[in-house]
Length: 278
Image 1: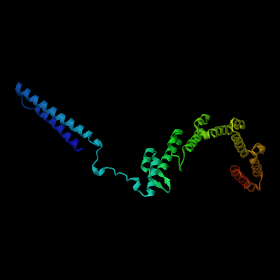
Image 2: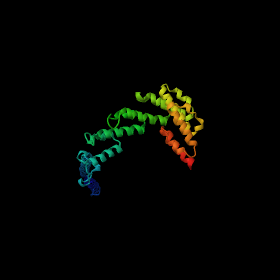
Image 3: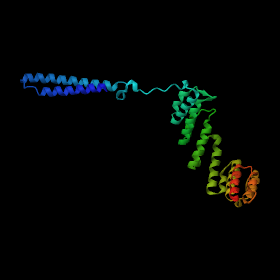
Image 4: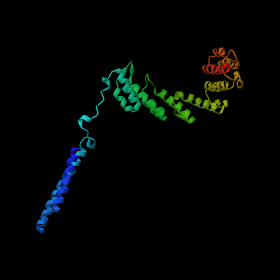
């Protein structure tokens, strides 16, 4: 700022001298020529000085953003010098900001047996992959206590399948999850349009049976009279009969519900029994 003031003053001096020179008494032709020549040389020299000075100022570190030393922002202390609680807070801040490169600052920090470099990278990578539905971002995950590349890709694939409802999403699923992904797609389709025959598109017999059981359990909860318990797998037929009895009983409904082993049927049973009692 001080240099700009000096430059402004210098420029003002140039203009003033020029005006004074123009207002001097009339000289002879020779004198006028010499005077004009000297004046032009002086003006050029001053202009060059202004330009050079301004160039130096702009090229100086900090340039126009220069601040007095007393106003410089304090540097953050090295995270390794902080107590564990403060280190965890800093890692949480880095994760929230989402820049995976910043995790390098916590490399080598172990708290409670957990590698916080791994914690930092895996959280950011998994969050980014989940938000963008980009499974390739899962490759940044470090296989360890806090996650794995395959788990990340499976989670992102399931979320993407639910949102896009397109079986082609499964083409990018991990190999170990490929069949399950396609089975999940056809199960969702069967439930969506209420057609159990869509489960037949699943090649794996166990997964196909799981699709059918899921379909009939959902139908049983909606309307017990529309489902024959023989349509379910043998290990679910007993629960099917108990559920049907519980939701039609006016005095022992909750007692029957306590006998159910299938968690989804048990929860739905208690909800329906409570409504019957009320």
